[in-house]
Image (cartoon, rainbow, N blue to C red; front, side):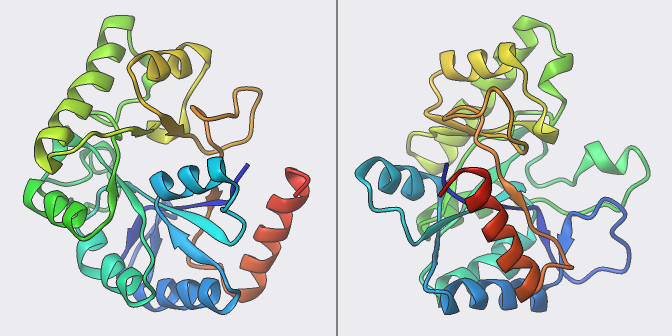
Length: 232
């Protein structure tokens, strides 16, 4: 199982109760660490293609959930400096808005990319995957609602980027057997989860959380933990 890092937002902040934000300075240092280790950050599309061909040994997947506006302003310039790529998973029903799913519960509001931003990121070589229409937990939805979330978000993104969208990311990482099967049947080539489980595989890929506290020593430890967990 390849190492995949999970990010959300990269920006300066005063309050981050959900631990979804990394400061630009810390993020830049984390990307330098990858480069200094002889590793290259890549999109899930590139990582999985390399994994299939047996050439993924020095590659690390970089993923960014929700599609925050700072992906365009803070993340991508750093990635391009290192010749890295990444996958971003926007919530199509909130493009150009904010993280309504968190703001409704009183958590800090964060602006999201709009359609033009998403298109521009794809043009710069970043992969765009789906994170549903509404960011509701798929495990709470009826079968017909689940199907609409998967299909409508993919259609909207394909119209924006003008290319096939093959990746999905489960909101909150919530995915049971029904949801994994639905994503596979909807035609997605892969899907990102969070935790290792009995469902782990191409449509429930576990990822490693990265936060503000993750300096060099913690990153080394997380990489080692991943290798030990998967017998690499």
